[in-house]
Image 1 (cartoon, rainbow, N blue to C red):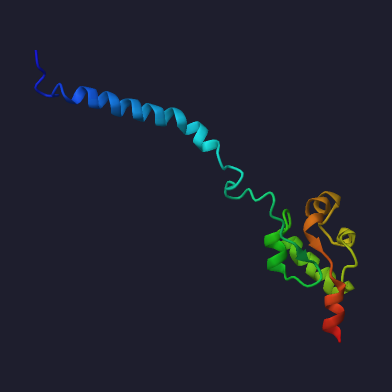
Image 2 (image 1 turned 90 degrees about the horizontal axis):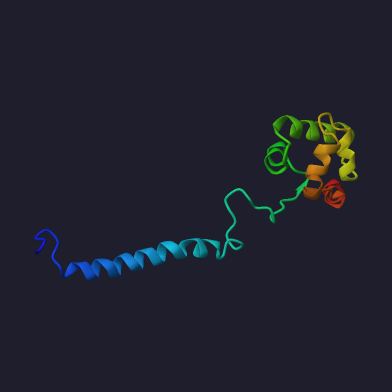
Length: 123
């Protein structure tokens, strides 16, 4: 007859809540797809390009901001710059030990060479 553990009046309410939960559950994939372009996944800042000036930036900056250039290659860039003077263009990095064509292509969009800054500092 009557179930004393669950009153009969709660059954329609449970059905309503169940329908609401199921509708939210079904809508979740559509909601998850909205706005994904506005908030990229952490570490996937594909549109963000941080430029470095290979004639003025220090080892830590070069190592942190240039992909594939760790502390050793960054130190080689700075040492080459100190021994031979400022870089005239990004291709000059090919003269640095440890920087080859593949590495240069990977970092080319981030490399900036501002010799005007150096000329101003020298005066």
